Amino acid sequence: MFFISEHPQSCVRRTLIFTIYLFTLAWLLVGVVCINTPPATFWPAGFIAMTLPAPLLLNLGFLFYWLFGKSVRVLIPVAVLFLAWGFYKRGFAINLFPAKASADDKTLTVLSYNVRIFNLYEHLRVDGFEISIEEINWVKNYPADIFCLQEFYNEPGHNIYNSVEKIWKGNAKYAFVSKSLVNHVGGQFGLAIFSKYPIVNKGSIKFGKLTQNHAMFADLKIHEDTIRVYNFHLQSMSIEEKEIVESYSGESQERMMRVKQLSRRLKKGFLKRSAQVDTLVAHFQACPYPVIIGCDLNDTPYSYTYDKFDGLLNNAFTKAGNGFGATYNGKLPFLRIDNQFYSDDFKVTDFKLHTEVPYSDHFPVSATYVLKRK
Image 1: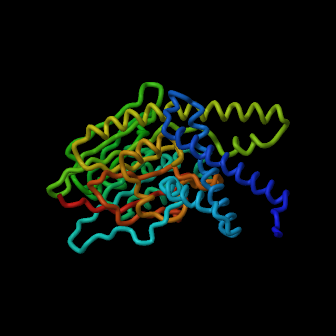
Image 2 (image 1 turned 30 degrees about the horizontal axis):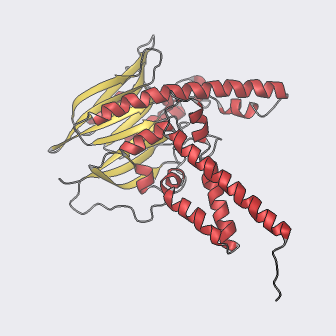
Image 3 (image 1 turned 120 degrees about the vertical axis):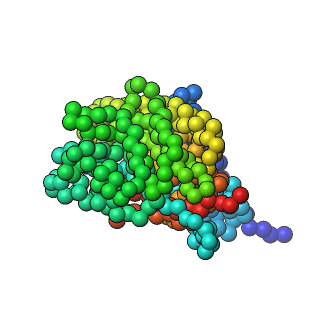
């Protein structure tokens, strides 16, 4: 009797590849656990959770490797793809056939946009005031029913930055500005909600005295219904693009010092957003109305911050968007930090990422909703 044995080198290679895949699975599981772990309890969880896209991509790589190699082991990454599909959709959404509104449905379009104080400071408007004027006009002319604006600035009486007057008051609409700071000329920094529907109740949610970040809400009367709209801007990383680039240059000692500085800022951001999101979730859970949220999370979809919202509400991008949905207008790729969430009382029929709008370091996002009939 004759038989052909597998070449020892081939056997070793297959064993090594499968061992690497087992490490990938372990990395994936640890990342999922860390996403659900408050950084205030275990701060390294924030850093580990950020790496979750890596094992998700590696799982796809092993899937194709074993698929083309016609190995039965391909069933393992296929199963992982199925089980972790929700995490894949956080980074790349596919919605070829989103929900549709019927002919008699009343739709509601919401725009969320970090306007970067309308480029108030001189270093943000290198070409003069033109960029500020164009940005305010774009917001004014966009056909939304509700606007949630972060890093908002309004200076009453100014011929350019009297943004409340320019955007809404002349159109007899409703506006609520939640101020975090007022400067020496009366300029108001903070958040704003504008609505074509009456605001019947409103309020601000503070995150403590040591931060200007906060949240706001407005209850809107829409025909016979009342809904609540939240708008918030969570703790920033306070990191510039050039600092990340510089961390890869210079002598090894200098690089290490820069990496440590960046890590400390990231850690601080994780801790502050962890407390802020817990405050907000408690507020959402006590709300008696259908909820829509427009926000700048300052965190990726692979974070404790995002996961807390995603576990309680639906995300408009994952339900109706397509592609990567990166909302950061800069050199760092694939950063989706601006979001809209909504309660089960709504269905989302459309989601748009406005990459054609260049005025801020964030792209605006809009979504169209239908309030489900009870």
